[in-house]
Structure formats: C-alpha cells, structure tokens
Length: 341
Image 1 (cartoon, rainbow, N blue to C red):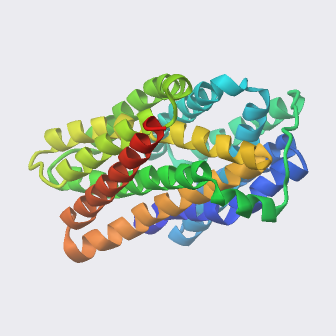
Image 2: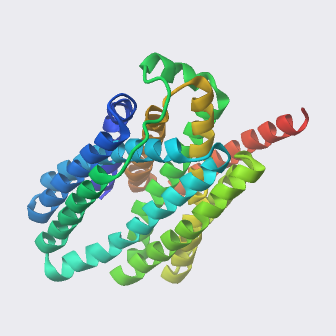
C-alpha cells in the first residue's frame, strides 16, 4: 500500500523540473496538454491492468503528468492573477483540486461495484475532453527566467526556501495519515464506507477553507496562516496515535484535513513571491513546489508506513509532531524579527 501510494509523488518528483522548464520555455498550455495526456494514458492502464506492477507504473506515470499539469496550470493562473490577490487565486485553485480529489473514494467504490474498466475508461474520456477544452483556451505566457541557474539562485531567498519547506511538511503529514489512518480505522472495525467518509469530509472542509486562507495570506501576510497550520498540524499528529475507537480516529482525521491543508496556500504564495523577486518564471518556480510536495508525500507514504511497520504508529506520528513544533518555533522567531523592524 505504501509503495502504491508513494508511486504518484515519486513520479511528480521525477517530472518536476522537466515540467517546470517546459512551462517556462515551451508554454503553459502545451505543458498542461502533456500532463493531461499522461493522465489519460495512465487511466487506461488502470482500466485494464491486472498486476500490481502495472498499477505501480501507471501511478508513477500519473505523477509525472501531475507535475506537468500543476506547473503549467499554476504558471497559467499566476500569469493572470493580480499581485495582491495571488494567495486567493492559489487557494481557489487548490480548492478545485481538492474538490476533484473528493471523487476519489466515489470512483474507488464504483470500480469495486461495476469494475475497473468502465470507471477508469470514463476517467480517460474526461481527461481527453479536458485536453480539447484546454487547447481552445487563451493562455498568457508568464514572464521570467527559465534557466536552471536562476532557479537554484532563488533558493537563497528565504521566501523560496521557506515556501518549499512549508510545502514539504504537509506532504509528509498527509502521506503518513493517508496510509496509516485507513489501516488503523480498519483495525478498529471501521468499514470501507466509514473510512472513505472520514477522508471525504476532511477533504470537503479543506476545499472550503483554501480560498479563505489565501485571502488571509494576502491581507495579513504569509506567516499568519502558516503559523496556524503548523500548530494545528502538530497538535493533530500528537493526538492521532491514541484513539481506541474508529469513530474518534475518524473525527481526528476530519480535523487533520483542513488544519494540515491550510499550509499549502500560503506556502505556495510565499514561494511565488520569492521566485518573482528573483526573476524566475512562475511555471518554472512551481517546479520547486512539485519537488517539495513530492518529497514530503513520498516520505510520508513510504517512509511513514515503513517506520510504523518497524516501531508502531506512535513513532512516526510523534516524530512528525516534534518536527511541527520545531517549525513552529522557527516561524515564531521569524514573525518576531519582522514585527521588531
């Protein structure tokens, strides 16, 4: 389960820099079309694949397509967004992504009921229709440098480095909860419907608050929602090892979604601000977002599962709670330093 869950972010990691470079150099629309094309191909593999190796490879290819789609789409979005509403635009995009993810449990249940081929074949058809739609849309190419040396230099900006870490951290948290949470709920007696419902409700709350967090980050700065998200995420991680009933654990997972997920919007906006100041093309800058997210999600899904196998669920959860505490202390110092200027 950990390998299959980690295959997508591993593919995203592999495709991050090529996808970002393509968005900056070739254009955001062609990059989105490549990403959607890989989604269609991998969905067909899921429709007819009959071995775990095929599914792992298809999931990896999905991740490469996701990297291209995100770099192209977010570069496309930032090119059209007013500077003072960047956070709100990114939050709205994330809300749309989470809303799409809400269909994941529905598709899984449908595949179990009527078979993989018709369900994933329908997903492939939707992907093809989206390619036609994207090809007809006007796209304004974002300005900026697409050289790798400029991208590497931008890491010296605290906003870029901080944005990368605050994208990596929720990836680790989500990756860990996504693997350990369902397994533990199943162990406590929850059925597939109850497990799906917990994650479905969590994602719904995350989708609702993402634009609100983006608006807050535009008005109050990127640090304020980041502090709230790190504190909330650390608290949830500290509580997750202890429930002895599926209901209590499910409630914690519901709260984990929006608390952890609120980090993504200010983190991406923070990184975008720093990359713009360094002269990096926004599509290429979001290659760093993909790298950070993929690193965290892979570490959480595969590493968290492996650590839990070796030492029990408490160890990865409490370790992550400690990492959140250290991050919160660093953000607090940064906030105090800025307020004292």
